[in-house]
Image 1 (tube, rainbow, N blue to C red):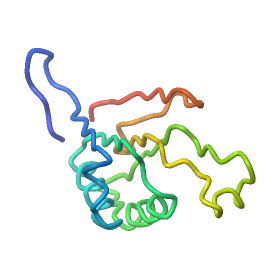
Image 2 (image 1 turned 135 degrees about the horizontal axis):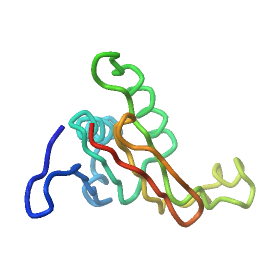
Image 3 (image 1 turned 180 degrees about the vertical axis):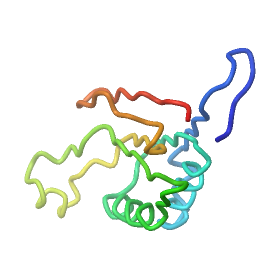
Image 4 (image 1 turned 120 degrees about the vertical axis):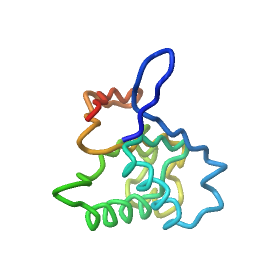
Length: 128
């Protein structure tokens, strides 16, 4: 895992990835960028999150890469939840789901969600 040294000592690297950087990437390029960062022990924060299809694919690829002696998988939290309260599935099909969301992804053995609601994600990040 990368260690950051400096005035504050050592810590965990957090990669904050803008929507602009992600907008021209294919779904698999996004997934690979995320998983490469998490494999390195980084916490990845996406400004605009992933589409539901991309999140599903991220989970599929992650499951195929889990190794009992190495990679433990990911923890993923998205804020806010879908804003499509008018119609559920029908609202999403009609394109009324908001894409404005922040997604936090990290190694499953290092990030633990302590609390999540409509306005806050509180997580404990440990060094392993």
